[in-house]
Length: 330
Image (cartoon, rainbow, N blue to C red; front, top):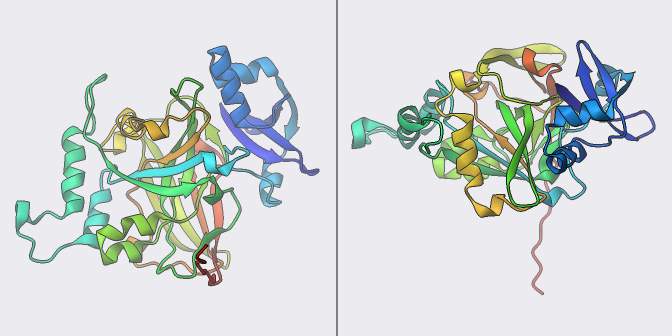
């Protein structure tokens, strides 16, 4: 089952469930988070809660998308309680792109492997442990809180000081922490993780800076397990014409880590198990337009699609005006 969050023409929140090629209103429901908490309380799955509440009239989600009324597939009343995070070097092929960005000339240690290649090799060797065992921890990064979560169709805003504004087509896991501190996976969605690859290339220690950017997730949320083989397309449109396009792969068949291993190494930290918090955790990619020498410009549109996820994730790029920041001593 796929779910979408949106507002109707009168501004009222709704949740719609995909039924074949159309969407139906989920009765007595205003948010996916509401469904998740109901499922935790009932010790049931979200799909079961949806079925009990029932489906109503047809909703034209495509029209809502065109009118800018789609919401991220998860949100909450307090954006400070949403954590945006991710992992890198998790996909087969991703290390080659990163290695080209971080290559160290003349480094003779460990067969001249860069730190990126070392990390990737660790994942290949021990990123998919047997069920119940713990594998090697991945590269991990923080992106921000819910104030940086951008809805489908809305602009991805790049800071004026950024050196680059590049897409990253990924899959995001979406989670809520239950009353006892246990993490519950709500589902998966397409994500544009959006980073500054030029800044990262200067020095890999700038990775943390390069990731402090907005991201976009959605439109559709897949309940249940992630397909093991996800095949999609990432593209950039400029003035309604395709500037760049490339296929991307995800799912565990195309990864050096299992989803369970990535989840374990995120939620092992107690700070990420605070009751009521929401987590949007992105699992990495191996496809970047930056690797092909593309530089996105203000007004370009990023589009990421994969058949399992239904509607494509589409966001225009907006370059932010310089901000005047003054620190005042109290």
